[in-house]
Length: 618
Image (cartoon, rainbow, N blue to C red; front, side, top):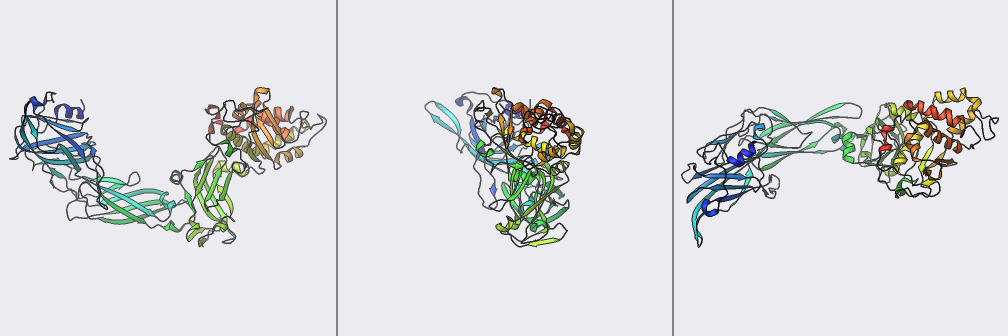
């Protein structure tokens, strides 16, 4: 049986005040039983002295002791704590005056090194903590001492013994709680924390607690450290009177340039009192307080809770609106200043990007680019907004030449005049940077309805959904990267004699013409083709579309790629008589090149999106 079961069946085996017999359910007349219901009070707040509401006690362990008016423990009684009802039931008491002392524990006291000893007198030590304690407490300890009187009451049905004392017992903690809080002058310092530790220096805690509710004993005063990075509140034993606790808070942070900064702050706490919350508040002064550079760590992202674009629950009225959802493949990470002066970063990419520095140049402030923001990670399809310290206070930043630039608060109009530059050592960014000839991509329904189970087909179109839009982003990032690959140009030159136009095989098209057509600026509105009419792809001018399977399989299926390049051939102005649709360019050269070189592409795997397993597909 576990420890709690022992308590239920045998009450407290070690206390002479209570018998080890299990409670027997008999009538009240036969048992003359007395019942006390346990509750516990909330912490008092040291600043407001307010207390939380009372709660029914749900203890992991309960010890109690009953003594008579002479202070002698009572033997020969039956008693039980019932955790389901939060009640102590006592049988076998005679008329007289008594005191009931109760110790309740939430948690496991053995993890604190605490021991509970049998007592024969309330003045004896009941609960003892190690004198060399070097850590905060893990369990909570509650205590109450309740005098009560048992009298005989007569009624027509007979006599019974009752208690004249209120049967509601409210316990209070015999330990204290200390809460640590901080004010940061720069929110990006707070989210760049590496460690937060507090060290109590030679603390003296009361370590012994008697049945009468008195503390005694003292700890050895050994320093110990608590981690504030995982929690900001700690349970501690009461401190010895007239011995204030002193300590040191140590914070280490990193900045976006990779430097670690350590800061320490001293504090003094006058006392730790039972059942009371003490507060230690620190105003953090830090070298990066005046930094103009947004340092976006993982904690910054968690705190900001950014939105994400092209997600499965995004309304089609948003993702088919070109003013809200469109991008150029040569500029997938869109940086701007919002109308309310926030830095806005929107990323059209199925992959995350790491270690991203964003620099800005504002003509009215400096001719040099300066460090505006640094992201540890830019998540795929993120839509991030961040506060700009430079918009509200005097800040400093580092320019591209290494100078320190001080700026008075920058107006919204000045911010919106900014020119941006992005850099990163991430190999993925190197691929995105290599996209020189970007195409502008948007999304269109062409009459379809994505809210209907079948896509609401109209003619050869059905409603494109976000699961398809994300694949559109992947395909066109890869395609516009491919058109500048040296290997791509080589395969075209090696097959120059197989490139012909709308006039048939004798209508030769030069490699330079093909490259120019592929690399020229274009805008496409991409949709989802309905295959029910036997059509699996459509393209021409600014229109492009393919059926669902092709969007999911373009990474590895040469037939799906053939569909894509066939329609791209139409976009480039070629008919079915050319090699760019039902000829070698689409059916042999480009489709196989794309699949064979997928590992070299920016989006080199279907696993980033895993669209084939998406429950929102058709």
